Length: 290
Image (cartoon, rainbow, N blue to C red):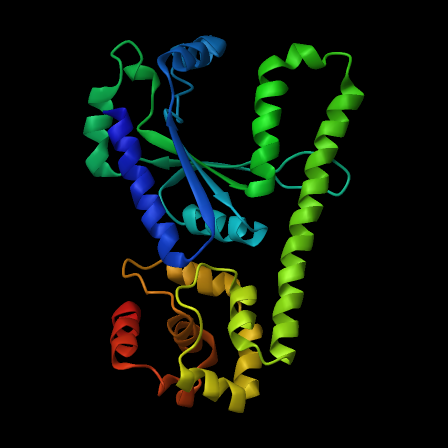
C-alpha cells in the first residue's frame, strides 16, 4: 500500500516536471521497517515524548541537470504544502554540500490509505507527510558516496579530519563544474545568436527538453528578418518561464514554435510574432493563460 501511494506521488511529480521541459531524473523509496525502527530508537526520547514525528516515511529525490533549476523548484514547492524546509545557506569560507530537503503534506485523498498502511506499532510516530530532496546530478553522485561511506560510519573518520575536509572539497570542485557548464551554454546561446542559428540559441538559452527539430519555416524566416526579436529571446528571464510552465494544470506541447510563442506572450509581446501562431497553438495558449 505504501509503495502504491509512493508510485502515485512519483507519477504526479513526474508529470508536473515533464510539462515544464526541465531535464531531470526522479527516484523514490519507502523507508523499511528496520530503518524506521532504528530512527525511532536513535532519537528515542524525542519520538516517544511526541516532540518528533517521522516525516520521511516516503521520500522522493529530484535530480536536476542545472543548478538554476534547483532554485526554480525550491521556489515552486515552497509555495505549496510545505510544512518544513531544510535549505542550507552557503558561505564563502566553508566546504560543505547544500542541503535542500522539503517536507510536504500528503494529498488529502491519500492520507487515510497511508494511515492504514502503517504498521500499528509505529503509526503514532509517523506524520502524514513525505520528503522531497532536490539535487543536481553532480551533487547527487557526491551525496551517494558521502552517505554510504562517511555519514553511516562516522567512527571511521575519527582522527581523519583532514581527509574529511578533502571530501568536502570535492563538492566545491563539482559546484565549480556546474557553474562552468551553465556558463558554457549561456556563451553558446550568445554565439548562436551572432551566427543566426536561432534554434540552437533557444535550446541553449532555455536548456529544456524541446520536441521536434526546428522552427517552422514561417517562424524561422521571421526571426531571420527580425534579429531584434531573436535578441529579445536571449534576454528573457528563464526563471519566470520555468515557473509559468510548472504552475499550470494544462500542459503545453513544447515544440520550438510553441515555446517561442509562449515566451512571447509572457515577456516579449511582439504582435507580428503572435500572428504567426497556428490555430492549434493559439487555442492551446489561450486555454493555458485562461
